[in-house]
Image (cartoon, rainbow over all chains, first blue to last red; front, side, top):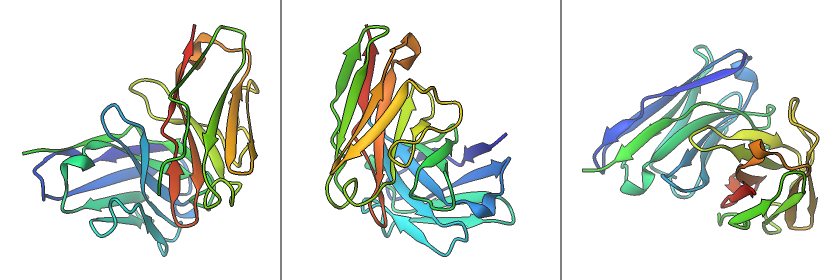
Length: 121
Length: 109
């Protein structure tokens, strides 16, 4: 069974940092692009970042460019999101999602259960 | 990277059909056949319902169908059932990014 398990969320002060992790299982992790998508309380889905299967290609929404860094460790089947200079508007549930194929932008076939990030003083 | 435009809400009675529209631009929906649709029940993670404009993943009922014309994609749910009541999001590849719609709440009356 394909599973994605996010961790690393929590309460952080504005300007602070957090690193999210997403542990994958049940599929060949290194063969699929991966994405992070967030959902602010009561709001819709917002794509945050994506990474190609090899990790060579990384992509970011304008709202997080320069502050967030996506990465992956294919030897550990784990996806990461390093979040720096956090702002109140980054408060959201963060989901990791498996690309439907090795083309990360095609669709998000499987989603994790999400991890909550709260940015507040 | 403006959000795709969806109606905020739609409704229908059991057994009826409803269609949710999703309007983008020539930079996203109009340029790529990577349009997908997601269903999200309250407190749950989104679920892929449609990919590549009109394809259904295994396990998604054929009551769900979708299409695209120019810069607008559409999701049709026929034979509405109570469990279809949820939020629905369209999504399009846009080159080096992905854009979601604002979401549509489907109410089954």
